[in-house]
Image 1 (cartoon, rainbow, N blue to C red):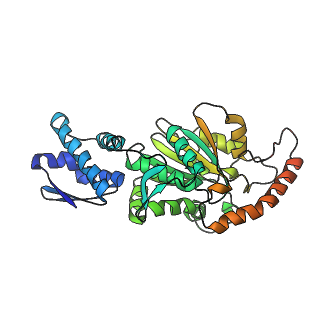
Image 2: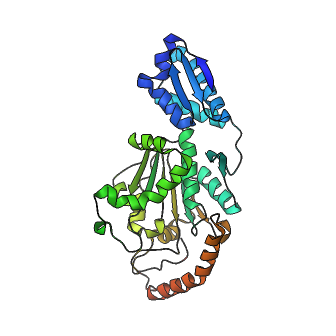
Length: 330
């Protein structure tokens, strides 16, 4: 823990109304901040505390000129502190059980690099390859660094042929099962109370795909999970939500399409239409990128032949030009 002395005349401007600025620093930098009289106590892991001290020092130097701090001032100072730090390719400033999140395969490294360099990334691959996990981890990193202001996690409400209307409860109870995997990924990287606070402040949002219509998402990272279960019209609606200073990541497994047989997967359709457009990246992860329990790779391999045979059958039924197959393009 480090304790900083704060001049009384700087306290209100530095801490913000109701300690608003301290709360933002706490969320962005992953540290604990305690205001006690004319002192500010900072605790957490050594690197995060060191960065936070540097950020606060920069903010204090700017106070004589401006006399107050905006949330933009704080976000930019946090972003600059990260830019000054050495960046290891494939490694994020997000940790789980004390270990930094990092790419574990060449495919995952290519995926992380694509997300960092492009504003729209499509990632297709089987279960266990880290498609959703790495996207959420990068979003948490960008949020902490002040590069984005919001994290929006989205899923289509289509699973194994079930419909929302048949599930019990209100709309929140209905969509929770579909969004739970995204929340689980967040829980690996943030304590529950922090997630609850960020969701309460609309900094983190979990929503079904249908709720995206009519919105424009600025200064955000938006992740669409299970995108193989979107239709082309839903995919178009989602992609056109991209706003200024935002990133979008679309993930899915083309072998696990739960749409009706006559429906085209929006993920496969997007690949056919958008390949070659500058600023859009497509990343394919394979069995060699599976990093879950070793049995997951065995299961994927065992089902591979059967899945391929089923997809050939669907392709023959949907060979008419008006109904392209779901195919292995996603």
